[in-house]
Structure formats: structure tokens, C-alpha cells
Length: 49
Image (cartoon, rainbow, N blue to C red; front, side, top):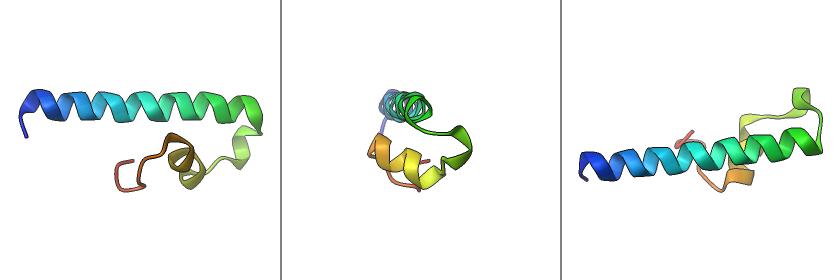
């Protein structure tokens, strides 16, 4: 994969995680959030996290 392709994939993953985190914080207590919950909402694997 090219450097640009890796960069785009990384930026997409970061964007999905950011959006999922913001949504979840608005819905529930921050202290109850786990990596599993965040990655499930972002529809990415834990390995990608």
C-alpha cells in the first residue's frame, strides 16, 4: 500500500473513533466507556485501535 493510502486509512480510522467517542460521551457516563464499546460504535476492530 502506498504511503498516501496508509495515511487516508489512518485518518479515516481516527475520524470514526473521534465521532464514536463524542456520541458515546453524550449518551452515557464517560467512566463507563471501554475500548470495546468505542470500537464497536466506530465499526472498527480492536486491533485497528
